[in-house]
Length: 116
Image (tube, rainbow, N blue to C red; front, top):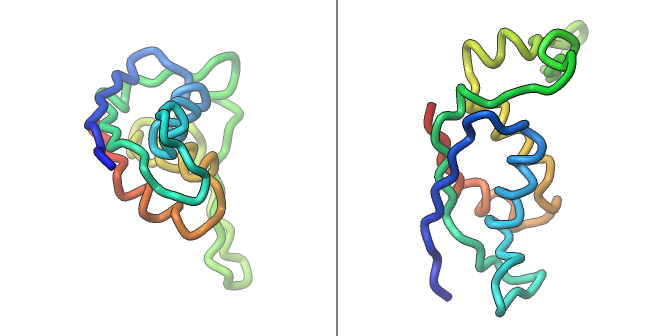
């Protein structure tokens, strides 16, 4: 099992379309020896995360939510503010939700490096 280091430039790409490419590379779907239960994906480095591009009105309408599990603990962050403050988190959330929900998910996410 040999892992390669793949660098992708996020300039001008939509977050979801970028995340599908990243998830496929982390899983190892393009490799000849792909097996669903074995984690043999590559390490992925994302460059220029702050230059991703939302299509349509998503930059104004999209809201990222998380809950602290306490009453009244819903936090909402608009996409415009998230892009300005923490663009790496946008890509990380997209990729995390596109990976299979199993034991290999956390190990695959550790191989994802995102640079502003």
